[in-house]
Length: 223
Image (cartoon, rainbow, N blue to C red; front, side, top):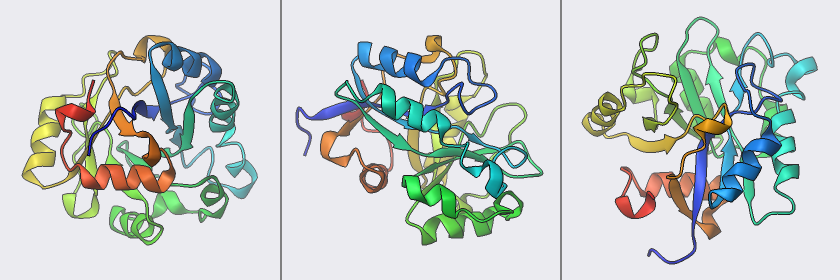
């Protein structure tokens, strides 16, 4: 049941500390999120095979997440970990939700060489959800829906042509879950509107439950 405890939450957020394409620091973004009335964000920095997949570099991946978490300490703000995953041989991107901090150290090397089918199964075995991000950008290709839990139906990045209307139709036609995010790289990407999550679900497992219980984005959870 909807109540007053709905929290504006960003589901697609990159930091300058970790993502090569990130411009705003985690602290800058968190402060602006808070100013715009947000109370939560999922850090989905780019998990790239040539940067973070070795055990030696794995610890560096969460640098942006930890910086965001520190910036939120004095605010009424929840920061959760996630990632935007890319396979070794393709330019498609996938958002992973439901991960705990400890999960990143346990990721197998060579994960980027998995097939989508096997990666989807790996996510499922760990209780995570796999969403394809912006599947209709010019260089991307919508993947087999049998190996996706959902799709990003709204990507708010103003510098990219994401064809969100095609993503909406793809999700609907294939009975996929839906998510929306700002794809924040710069401060200008922090939007006024966002998904709103019940406060008690602002945990990794809670985000999974939230997404699973709302296959399409209800207007009551978007403002």
